[in-house]
Image 1: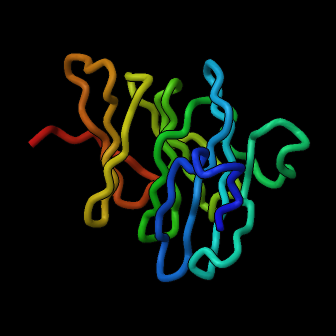
Image 2: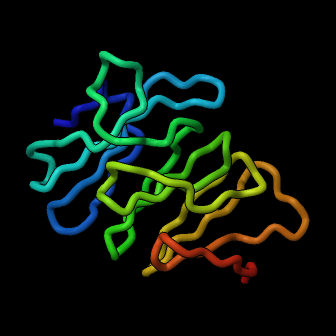
Amino acid sequence: MLPCRSPETLSGLLTVSGNSLLALCQGEVYTGYGEMAVVASGNGGGTWTQRCNNGPSGILAEVGSCPDAGYPVKVVAMPNGVFLMALDYIGGVYVSLDGGRAWKPGITSSSPNLTLSQGTGAVWMLGIETFLAGERPAVSTNGRTWRRAAFP
């Protein structure tokens, strides 16, 4: 069972490798702020450990430093163990190098709304609300460095 407050708060779930899972639980959403907790399981979901949260005190214990702005819309695991989280409203992708416990800004989009798409060994980031002339998607093969790419 997931440690989210209710099934409706589960925002994203992905397999990292084998029996390792990462889940993003999302709570109340306010202007510019999406309450979230990141939890992980190493045994296929049998038990879960909270990695970070940014919710109000008293709901969940403070353990790590989740992003404190934006609406989480997608989480992705890279083959090298790096986790990525797309955040709407701020139009950015945050990166975790320690299994989801701490997050730092990775790349921003000129659009406040974006999406991540995972392919074979790469992740693509594209702003989806306002497509500006000349804007190109960004691609990363390791979650740490990004390059702008042309549309095929």
